[in-house]
Length: 401
Image 1 (cartoon, one colour):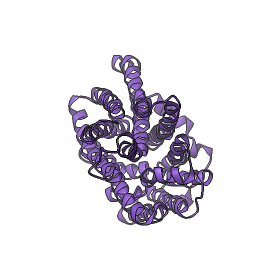
Image 2 (cartoon, rainbow, N blue to C red):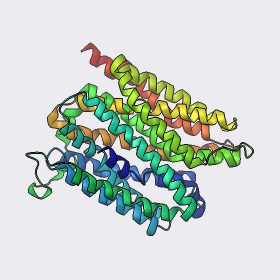
Image 3 (cartoon, helix red, strand yellow):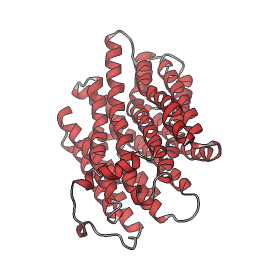
């Protein structure tokens, strides 16, 4: 399942790696470029409630296989059929819809089969391997784009999700009692299990983790979507003499890789000092380092890289903690619905993040600024709001009770 996690998001960073090229070729604004990045999350949010709720009712491997195939179709369509902003967002949305049926369902496959040991460690490794897949996606996409162009990069990386779906199907066994897709009836409650969601939201501990995941995802995916563009701008416009030793996509690869141990070690730290306290300190550190990175645009390349790595470490240090906290805070009978709502809220943040970042860039530049510090501030502030709200309201009430 760790391998399927890597393969499923083989094309995840392809758009981020080609953003500046597509923006120039299609003459897009920063908001439009950010919206295309957000299109992935539109598809994700639309499908994930249905996909994850079904994991409580049918063989989860079937959902994973269908998601992998759909994600591949979206990537292939982006590389072969897209011609402008208006049809590109549709294919990127299909890609996101497919991934929604692999990420959390993959976690459900693991959590249903792990019956001994510390379950949060298994979860932390699974979520951390998202970083490995993302890093590989940046690296491979960068090479393919340089050699063959951005369209070929989408076409080749479209193979990954389909392979992931096949591997999940062949590499895991169906559990006793799990039904087939064709053995159950469907209704609107499968897509929007409102009664189950209400039960999840009534669990204050779970609600806190979902709100934190929303702020985390908004910052994470906005940062990842614009990271290559940030380094390209820093190296070519802000300070052309400030030559970076590596290409922007290679730097993004290394930055994503550092997030893997950060996520795993972060979960271990949370086990020792407490999840709430760890999440608070990490989000405060992420806000400080993010704004510092945006302000470092004209600094020496070594300073920019150090701040980028520090920001990435802080972003990922609470990723596994938030997801693992949600999984262990809800009853078994609503775990699938809880994971679905967790994804809906988190990836809704991911939907908004890239567009907010791009819109802030446009507004700042209209006012005569380069806009990068303001753009980073616009995505890290939500973590600070979360800390304030939970510290003085949500989790405080939970501790008193």
